[in-house]
Image 1: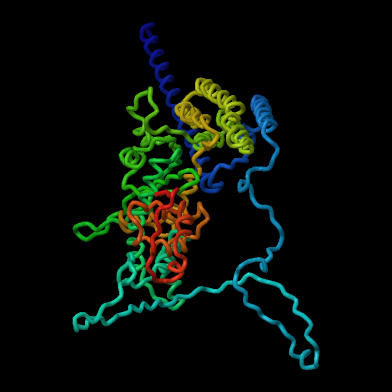
Image 2 (image 1 turned 90 degrees about the vertical axis):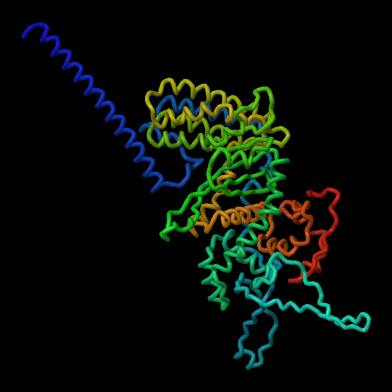
Length: 545
C-alpha cells in the first residue's frame, strides 16, 4: 500500500471514529435526558404534587454529603440566624399562625338552636324515685334544611274617580328574575353548591330529588348564567375597575378550561375548545377572575393594560406586552414582579435529577424564604429595611453564584434551565426588595386558581363562553366573600334582591369588601322579608362608590 493510500485510509478511519464518538455522545445525552424525564414523571405520578418547603435539599445530593454543600449550608444557616436575632422575639401577628387546640368544644357556648332530649327511667319513677336533677351533655347534630314556598299576595284596590271604579294593583317589588319560579335564596343555594362546594348540577339535581324537589339541571344552568352575567356586568365589573385604578399590587396567574363546542354543519360533535381563566388577587381587598378565549398578550393587555402598580406573575411571555415599548426613564405603566416559587420549582426539578447546581440553588432559595419568614415578625413599617439588611445579601450571593454556575455547567439540561430562568428574571425577582409588603411569590394566585381546577375535575367543561364568563363572576364573588369572612349564600340571597334598586354608579358599594358597611345602612326589616322593596340609603361620606 502506497503512503498516499495509507494516509487516506487513516484519515477516513479517524473521521469515522469522530463521527461514531459524536453519535455516542448524542446517545448518552439523550439517555440522560430520558432518565431525567423519567425521574420527573415518577415524582409527578407517585410523589407529592408540589415541592415541599421543608424538604432537606441535602438528601437530594449525589449520594453522600458533599463538602462544598455542607459548607454552604453552614453559611446560609448563619445568615438565617443573624436575621432571626435581629427580629423581635414577639409572637407572630394575629391570624398568621394555626390556632392551638383547646380540647373538647363547649357547645353550650354556641348560638345554635337547642333541642333538649330527656333520658328518663320509667321503672325508677314507677317506684316513687324523686327526680333531683339532669346531667347535661351536648352533641353537634345536623338536619337537612328544607324548601318552602313564598306566596306573593299582591293587593288590588278599587279606586273610584268621577264615579268610575277601576282596579289598581299594588306595584310588586323589583327583581332580577321576573315571573321566576325560583326565589333568590334558591338561586343562592344553586350558586354556592356548584361554585363554592364544587357540586355539578347533575349531582345537585339528584340530591334535590332525594329531598322531594324536582329541579331540572337545564333550569339551574339558565338561572346560573343569568345571575352570573348580571353580577359580572355590575358588581364584579366595578371591582375590576377599582382594582385597576386604585390597586397597588396584583398577583395573577392563569389556567385552562374546556368549553363545549357547537356542532359542525354536518351534525357531528366537535372536540372541546380550550379557554383560560385569569385570577387577580388584589392585596387583602378582592380575589377576581376573568375568562378569556385565548391566553395571549392581547388578553393580558385588555385586563391589565391600564394598571399602574406592581403585577406579580410568572415568566410567561404574554406579560411582556405590558412593559414593551415603555420609555426607560419613566415609571408609567405596569411594573412586573417575578415569583420566587416558580424559580425554586426549576431548581427542585434539577435537584431531583441529581444536579449539584439544583441542590445548591434550592438551599440558597430556602434560606431566603427562612429570612423572609423571620421578617414577618418585624413591624410593617420596618420590613423593607429588614429585607435590605438581611435578604439583599443572600439575593446578591445567589445571582453571583448563578452566573458563575451557568458558565461551569455544560450542555442543555435541567440545571442550565433553572440557572437561565433565574438570571433572565433577575431584575423582576429583585423587585421584592422594593417593599416589605411584596410577597416572595404569587402562590396566592395559584391557590385561588384551585377553585377553577376543582371545577375542571367536577364538571369537565363549560357549556359556552358566556357560561364561563358567568362562572368567572360567581367565582370572584365567592372568593372575595371568603376573603372578608362573609357567608356566600347569605350574600347572594340578599344582594340579588338589593341589586335591582341600586344606583348604577354605586355598584362598588355592593362588593364583598364594602358589603358589611353598606348592609348596616339598609333597613333590616326589609332584608328580613323574602320579598320586599329595598330603600337605598344615600352614599356614605366615606363611601366606596
